[in-house]
Length: 262
View 1 (cartoon, one colour):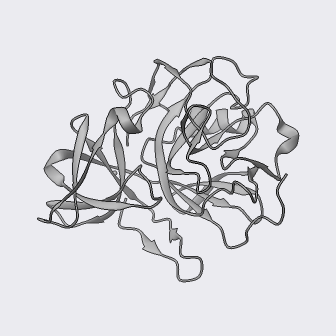
View 2 (cartoon, one colour):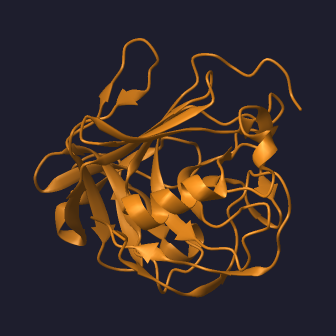
């Protein structure tokens, strides 16, 4: 087992997913493990995975974000606004650009792929060689370690009415439902992105996630309200064997949009 996770009790809030589950869950929280700047792909507009990615972990429960190095204050990101268990889960950000004393980071806020600048002294910098690439057109998800594909699986994705948004995201938290037979399966990763069509879901923010399912027959189709679903065996392997850290980049390609909703 490669994940160094702590367990806590929380309400499951990964949203933008099919099904409904208001029961309490446990949260195994992997520690953030540091990635070079992300470069956009000219064909799809989605940044391509680098061999190493940098992750910024806030030293406090809030982080001030600026419009530019030495620029005006853009916003303050609060842990209790973007995390299910802020007392137990570190607040992490994927680094887009490193200028030494200043870092441009992706933020877990609307609109999707919002970035801002933070002071390097306000965060702890780490790195990971892991990345995840999602193909909406062929219902595929691949986990990379550097340039090596360590796991590839079929997935279910959002419908036309509630599509899975393409773009650059990262893992913000890891949640564990109380039972394996619910709509989220054995584990659920909350990503930094949000549904483009839903303002809220199941009583919480419409956060996009990657999770297991109690409907394995739905894999390989447009079936969710925006989340990425896979079999319980696969999500458990990713959590327990691969051990993706918080901050791991997730690149979702949307070159081909869903043809019809389900």
